Image 1 (cartoon, rainbow, N blue to C red):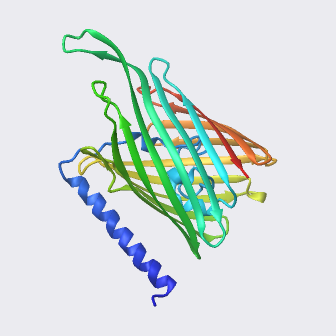
Image 2 (tube, rainbow, N blue to C red):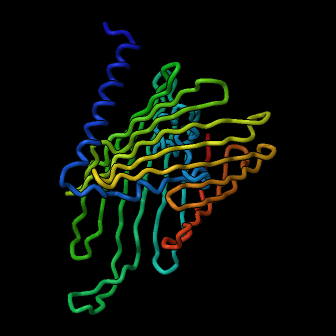
Amino acid sequence: MICGKVRWTIIGAMLILLTFYSLSMAADTDIVNAASYLKLGVGARFLAMGGASTAAVDDATAVAWNVAGLTRVKSASVASMYSAGDQTMDRRHNFLALAGSVKGLGSFGIGWINAGVVDIPRYNDQDVNQGTFNSNENAFLFSYGASFKPVRLGAGVKVLHQKIDPDSTETKMGFGGLDIGALADPVEAVTVGLSVQNILGKIADAKVPTVLRVGTAVKLLPGNDLMVAVDLSKAFVNLRGKTAALHIGAEYWAADLIGFRLGFSSEKQFAAGIGVKMSNVSVDYAYTVQRDGLEPDVHYVSICASF
């Protein structure tokens, strides 16, 4: 019988090979830009920290950031998010997730990401206004995490749903890809994380870009009231157009009641936010600013609860 360490070494090696295969497939002629909303991130807490979440995530939003973070969810947890931004076009970006752990079995999570635009102007070939239409995209996430000292591992899959074409009632379904993640604590108060998302994801004729994230989170001050997190992310959009970004965030809790957050992303974004804890419920707010002014600033509100 294969022992536990050897078994997980084999599984890890297979997942690494699968990841590199997925990245190499970006070299073909398929469009590699589907489900771009998956890159936006979820949850006001980590959006206020510039998306620096890979090693820091510890709630139900782990289904979208790093599935290994589910192992930190010790009781049933619900997370939600609502966004409001561009007033000239009603853009939507919402999120809902549920996570929990079962003794002896591990941690489980399910999530839903919704994105779209309402009232898009529609014109015919003669440039005559034909009214408006809506676009709507959804991702359904199913994730699992388990601890194997000294590391915590996670895996998940996504199912995509898309309705964009104004001339058709047809909806498209697709496989959003495989997500894998890992967390480790090399020394006290320091966590490192790895997440690879959307492996082999595809909907219709377009592939979902594979995203690689590595990060670290350090807790400082007595009581771990201050956390600083840094992430590096890379989206494999296609062979010539790979994108990389730096994410830096900080979170400070005053009296374990009010949290203050600042964040920066080299993807042209500054962020700030605040959170309030009340028993097992937290309410978080984030405001993201696009430095180049080409994209709208966005407000995010999240409510999280544990039971």
